[in-house]
Image 1 (cartoon, rainbow, N blue to C red):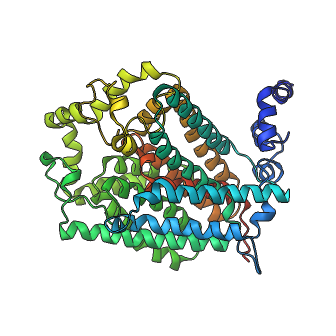
Image 2 (spheres, rainbow, N blue to C red):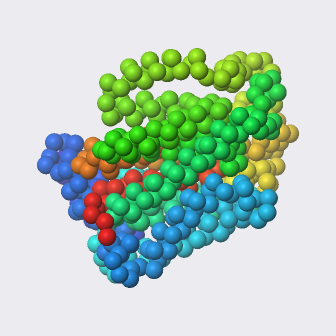
Image 3 (cartoon, helix red, strand yellow):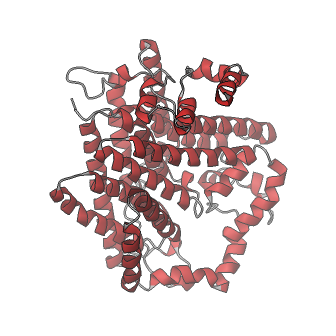
Length: 494
């Protein structure tokens, strides 16, 4: 009775009318179906996905991807763009000395993704075909968009700065666009397997290059402190070890899901070198955030899949300590070095935290606006606007805040950080729900791998501003879209 009254009150509210008008939310939407399911009713998650109606871009349009004959031009173009972006990411740094590839991340790629996503959406609405479901994770993305828009408006009113919002806004919109494209692009299992094989192959090659950098002694002095005595932190073809560690973590857990999802032993044997190389490269990045995220991801994956593996993992981890290079321990012990504290207080994480404490009360609800604090955009465009309000009067503006949550808190305020936390929570929650309801073993384990990678991605956000690095974020948002599309993927390919 209480559920019925709540549902009736909600449907008569302004909020429901707003969502119904702009997204086509039906009465049997996923929020109430999930509520009824967990109250012991008869509804199953696959039924929710089939019956819920939102957004109306349509699966009839999606089914034209990889057709026998002809097909949707925009869908085919989106699929090609999806592959090209994932291929472009590892060669971006290699090209940057010759071509203005930064423009690709700040303008060309975002615009291309947004245009393709909008065209796919409009074409689906024009055909008035069957709609896809709206999950809580989709709502999380929508709320992120609204929070970004509100924060941008408030920032324009306060500072009148357009350039920062322009750059940062386009980067964020590219994440939303690739999420939406990933949401629609795969319906055939064979196409998904080809995509995964392609990306895992690229990850293997990049990891081999990274391991080679360590043994060749490629110096990376700009990424280390002298007192840590680390001569090489591998980064492969990516910009820095932090990005590389995030890249490895994403594909390690996706590969782990694939490994437990395939049945044939020969394929598992072929994947073993991939895990060895990926893990070795991750260790050699000497990224503390990458290591901590990896540990959390491993525990989550095997706790959900089979807790019996945890004891074996602990034993292997304890034995592997003796095989790690000595620099591994320097990285953690350096945290307790007085020189680290001094540097951190002047231009590091301690300074960032002090700055946040000083600035936040002045912009409590909606923040200072996207691109106005921390990160490469704020550093290169007009750092003095916000940093002058900081605890040190803008004396040492940092290029990175080293904490995505603090950056969202300052840029989008209390409202933004609550929305961001909601998005993280519901994305992982829906991923676990999908894992629990899928019947196909390969897709089931892949969903767990992507969910674990998503958790690792945001754990790393505690130690770096991950959304400032499109190399990681484009990949992760793309795979989040794929995760939500897994229940619709067909076993039979065209």
